[in-house]
Image (tube, rainbow, N blue to C red; front, side, top):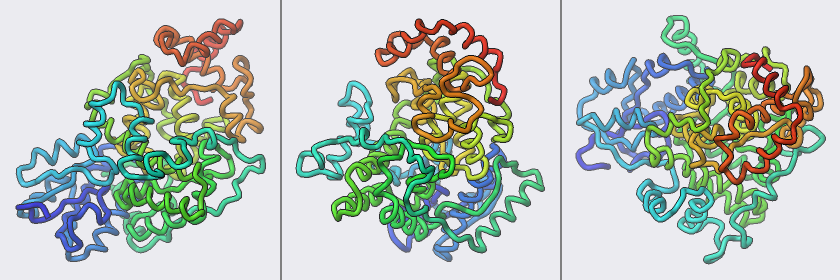
Length: 493
């Protein structure tokens, strides 16, 4: 326990035992209702966060002081003494706790690489390339290493992990782990209903049975289920989409991990054990470990490294506001089958895996020049695993290319051909992926060429965009494509 601190204050995303220094350390937990009044969060996200927080309070019993107040300030005024807190995960919360004289802020937990190590690595690099950071982390943690060489003599098995979906429409894989709700879940749901009736909060999306772990015990069960039944098939189709299978072979562990219920290193070593014991192939295990100690940590550290102004970067001058049908998750207003299905899954579940996020939702926004900061906020509010640190780099850098290439070397824009290749959406869609003009033109195909035309001056010096930009000169109907996309505007496709 930190010297002089009477009690460990744990935020609602710091709920695992690794946020405490001992099993019997006194704890402070605060449920601040005002947080849900400031933004219109997804109903399922609010339910999951509050369920996890209240379950943790119930587990700790008399070891914890659990206060349900309107604000954090009100709660802190009720508890005398001093507190220690692991660095919060958002800039707003971090600034808040550092201004409190009774609070000692400790280094962050819940990530593999600490901030000092990342900054030393960053100072040694000409550019902050994910691949180099990931290789450095593999060496430091001795994960999938055989001596000084990577297991299998390769660092990256991406080439093996880009298979299209099976033509059957479903993967031959055991379904995901799902929890059973209890009295705490019922009470949370009743309270959210009351808050809405009282006008204290307003939510987006639909309610439904909890689908993600809310306790450490549940999270460990979900991890073991994934390792035993799903990891082996995770890699090959991790980039594929199916209309009849929203989970594919994905773990569903991002939400409990971002609540602090799982430590990424424990998951990474457990996945390596699955490979070493012959229960999962190397390509799948490497792909999963790369997400944990590579991409997840990289996004966390760049959130702090690039500074708060990073969230407002807008290298492609994208200023259009998000349309209401999108912010309201009105999937019924959409006809394009891929976008309709993905938006409906967000509405109904608050979650889709990373490819629908990147290549459907974000791709559509990128093509139309929607404001990157607004998209960041939308993802933060609309996804059960969405947090500020998660979404700033993923959206501003990765999906909207608003940072000019600090995180992704080229924009992740694509036409309908990509969606047709990596999903089964296009066959029954009223739009045709090969058409860019006309009533049956795919909004992603027309949007792709319109995006390139609008940004060709901004992208002309990017060597990875030379071939796509050269394709503009071969389009005899480019003016018609651009005019049609301008006429359609932000109407639901």
